[in-house]
Length: 492
Image 1 (cartoon, rainbow, N blue to C red):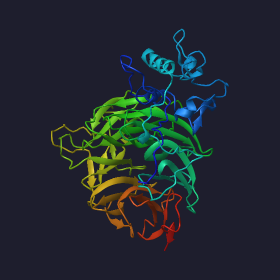
Image 2 (image 1 turned 135 degrees about the vertical axis):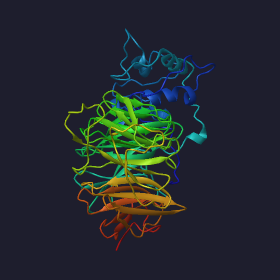
Image 3 (image 1 turned 90 degrees about the vertical axis):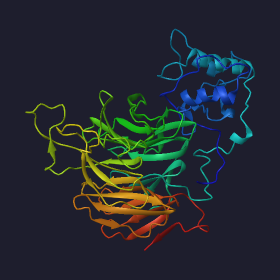
Image 4 (image 1 turned 120 degrees about the vertical axis):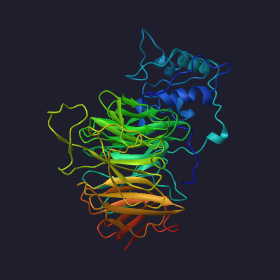
């Protein structure tokens, strides 16, 4: 990770998802850091942060709370409840409050906590260890070491290559990487990124470990943060878009898989039958189902419209899969010979193409599964949906991706400080090992034309390979970095 001072535990939040207020007000003197700041994180900072300063009022650092917004009135006046405009906005009158805008009002206990804090002098008791340099568009990260790259993604038109960094997503010109646009947010960890089907938006699963999770949606053309949604109290993972571009799904460390409306941030799905962290998600091609995988060594299927758990797609025997599953992808196209009747269809219903899903994880073996179970008796220990297994990779597989036609897939793995990226033929299982991968590999993505594979991992480099030959075309450091410290790029 880059060696940077942390900013003041910021969080970009719009709507509280999966959070709850304390049942009673805090005892004793109110603490800004322990009592008030979490309320602002959960309910306010998504619309009032450097990347999205609603009302020209920023709430991610203490000094900003005392300043006036576009109303001209200071948000917080220590010791003065009447002149503290923020308090007036969050106070509930006739069951409604002006802020949070278009959201549920704060709970009475939360308003009381803010009120008492202002009345007691609105002191900033943030520990010195939690203070650091502000990171935003005006103060971008300065890297002293290349950051670990957890995700890469090509835009649907193939013109952009998005790469995760520290507090940011970097948008490179895919044809000529370098001098990227920088989408700088508040989450220090950006775990997963994905472009919307039309390429207009970019979603990220992010957060600060052990503090908050955040789902971001960026307007790609404007380079602006469109939406920021808080989720649980830990980093979230495995972001994916519904085929119609209206919903964003992700996995959580509280063992749930969730989805939110991509335009409002409202939660539209929550399924809680996983028994460990959920690390990746993928929608079916028709958008009716959501597949999720996690550390509990299972792939589960959820019906989107009803939020109903449908099935364990993988073996239902606990521990049948050796290790947790870390990655899943839906096959874009399925050969016509794979036909079945879906479970709820009548015997005379039209037969449909079924989705196939690729999964991989800790045991290093990519596996292809049918999404829906055929009319076979369920038996403990079976793995009836499995279609094919592929040669194991060294270590654990953190990323998998099909090409546009669904005839090939790529997978990235890591073991003992080394990494490998492979391309497999889906039908034959034949593989191509990509050359000159210089460290553990965690992420992989196909160019839409299928002529280039981008992969990345621990050492901060992005590798661009010819998937047909495995030859390295180019590699580069994804973040702005001093050229005298490490080569920015190498082409062979």
